Image 1 (tube, rainbow, N blue to C red):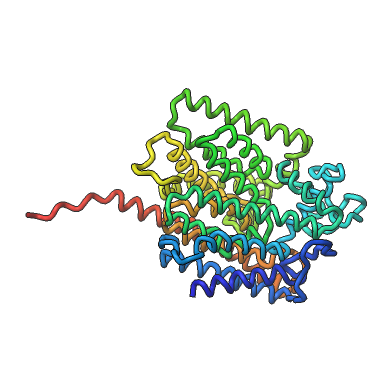
Image 2: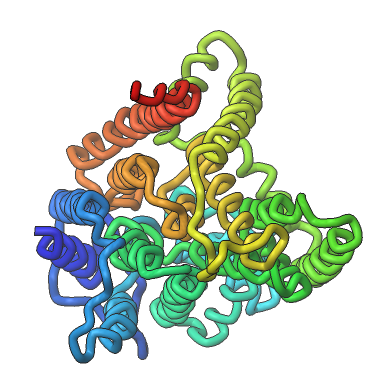
Length: 497
């Protein structure tokens, strides 16, 4: 049953992504030398049903895997099993490259920003629809509500978008396909990093259960082709490198923050893992990390120009529909100005994120990052990497669960670090949360929907999204309370002789 659910879930996702443009898939114009579409048209209702079914079946398959302990089993030993284990993710990634992105129109934004930068413009200052008088074949394809929005992404991300544009030239489909290559490479890189960091077969099994063969993650971040996946790969690399090569880790961290600034939590996680080092060693590591990361950060921002942070400041005031905070700001705005309500929510969200981080830190423990017999000694590279990975998961999950503005693909770093955590009830809680979030943003575009589909999906987003967020908070509190009550119970007295 589990395998059948996985196959059907992946098949539905790939069919929607390979079909003609739909409510989930923007049209990208002439194919050029990039892959084209299947001769299959899908209505907005059919697309919504297919994606909801894919995410439900995918969540069911992963949930069954957690319940049956799939990730803890011994790897198969029949001839060719090892080769298949290495090749099937590559095959799945190749299938993704035969499709076009679904779930949003963000990839058209990336192509437009890269196009503007490649032609000498400033994507942080110019609205896509205004470039070249609105006649450019790439920038004119940006869809509402982003037609007048300059870039909010960091200069390293913009550099990759520019590189994609230089290869794709004035063909939008070609430009997007080059970006998809980067996305699939980032997804496979995360798997490689996780499996190399895993200490045993149980951890490696969790990598493929929760990351590689997870249709919900695959549909949201890989077929969605979101820049968050590239930032996730960079952040994970920086965290794993920091224990042994802080200079190199700093270079990668600088690129991470310069892709999407919220992924700077990787730097905080690294600093947390170094808290017990001696002063001399700590100063040396801090110097290496700071000098190398700031050099990359400064160089990239000098190249990008002075307007990098302008749109980021505006975007920081947003509150998305499917978070716990949207109903709160709606209620507060009835008794106070909207800006004041947003400020109150922003302050409250910081408090919630801090509390969530504190609770999660006491709930989770990660697998060791290398096989150690005996266990890694305090201050060793293995112990530092172990601590940094745990802190990264805690910070990423707390931010994703508590931030006022959150979208399904914002969970990318959470799911890239969850496989190396020890299995707990959090696995199921986070799986349910991501599944609801993914379904809340189906079909993905704000156009090409029938009025019935728009009403249904928007209603689901406004109701199921916040409700699931509150339930997740309550579930985490219940798990924490149960764990702490067990710790506080006195030990049972020994039996009478």
